[in-house]
Image (tube, rainbow, N blue to C red; front, side, top):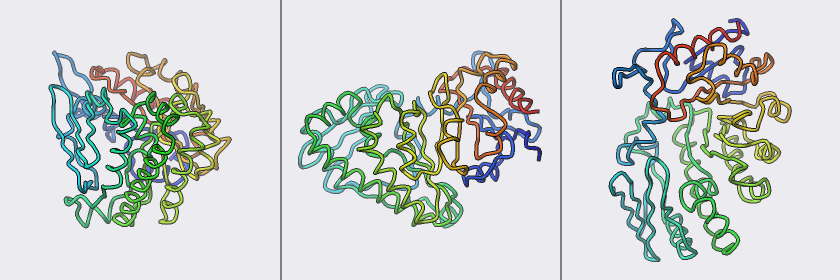
Length: 362
């Protein structure tokens, strides 16, 4: 295999990248697209809408899905001495927790909360109760084969990212952090205990898994280096330590502005970053990560829909050249091409993209 080859949907190649080994070329994953041995997109990836052949976007389908229809993770959450209710109001999912110390309610539409469950200092007490009175057990649908063969354990959100995105929201998080530091500290500690409990369960259930994928969505637009170092760095460091103790590598999904946080990331001991977004949409060139991190550090880079939807082959390749360089292709690097939840991408654009990627490094 030439160092300049382009590959798609090669499971062994992707595992080697996660292991910290060179891709020996350009390895690509195109969201929602299966690429066959003929290096063409499979027809099952498309649908016909209003007489037009368009891509079946997995990101858009997830965004529009209801909570009751979403697949369950590998674990079940058990709530003790409280009532957890999922309901619907029109196109919104409603989440209610009723506890002996109070009730909180959150409402979500199209995968985004427009009403966060935690709004006040009193709600912090309720939310701490929720997280000190829950636990996790294996999803009963898991089979022995699932446990033997799973290669990646997926877990989402450290405490701060959970609170910022889903529980409190950006502004109120920092207000409560300043106004109620003792209550916030107690909540963060309780949430971290649950994260570690979940991670321990995963490493026990899936002893043969090689990787921990930890979803975060970290960005310096939402957390400063000072707050990251104080609040989140110790949490991620503990996940990395536990992962390494069980013989696994920790790869963290962070798709935001990262350059100002890289020195913090180094101290966590993480083994890779999933969805690194270089300029102009992000601020972290791949060269910067390669300079700062060990040679076996895994980079899964992001190529947003902005750069390929509606673009010519030449325009796509020019965008690729601005971020990808030969030495990168001889390192643990994969390119993740995203649809960014665009529901109306013409099939012709997908075909142009695949052709551009195939010919990029020849």
